[in-house]
Length: 368
Image 1 (cartoon, rainbow, N blue to C red):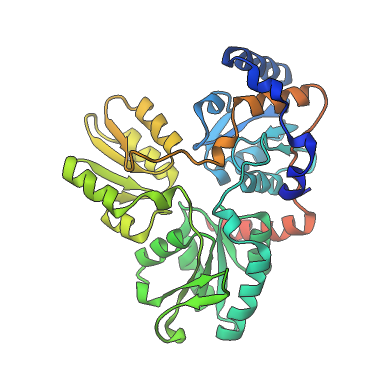
Image 2 (image 1 turned 90 degrees about the vertical axis):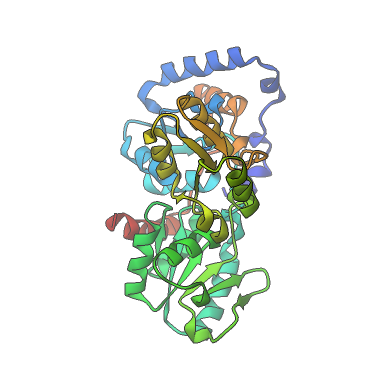
């Protein structure tokens, strides 16, 4: 069952009674069920999750890290993945067949991942192959659907994370003259630029209008960027940086590479979620930091680092809306259904798609 089919079924609607429960009662029930299931239950929680959910996570991390940890946990029969749909898909791809991956709320998707659907991708590939011949290697950010990962694997490409994107892009250029980078144009642009590819050699593929956005000779193109983005990180702007510099000139600015090229260029540091966390935690006491990433994580870094001044680069930023669909009531509902012998919101990736996606993931993991 895919996400659209699942959303149409009544079994995926949380009963209203869960909205009436007190926080104390819900927390007590979750603790009881976790204790009852023991090692049979594993709850991974992404860094961007709410504190009300993260408090029950058996492991926290980024999407690929959590999928890998889930795969290593052979004792877990049920993996209740507190993240978004593509993350649960990756966990299902990497775990054993007898392990069940569950997403507490099937509405927890990712706008970036949804910006590259498989039909658009296949159509674009056919056009690009006619235009450039067999000179392109596809790479996809792990923040993509299983179908896109499978497409990339089928075409000899690989997945990348924000931590290893530079190494994977370097590898890709040893394989082909050009790369197609899906689905986040900003990570692709920032990574290629840092490796010395000039902006003048980067084109953007518009999947809505099936056309290449580029001024110049197509032969000069080395990087084709899919026209997608993270709806959270794109909301950090040059003006945010200018205002921060004006008010706090001694404040360090650190952002995620899903931010635009202009924002990354003006920041002091840019790196993956883990990079940002490590930088803040290791920073000297009294240092000042403005962070350009998801608000739940920023708030947690503020709470965990009282000896430093930590703020959001954009003070009006909202948390990731789809990530925030996973909340305490949905977590409790999922666990209580499990306790009654009902597996709801299970994520199942088609075997063919899974095998092709594993090919793309393994190319990356082999080079890690």
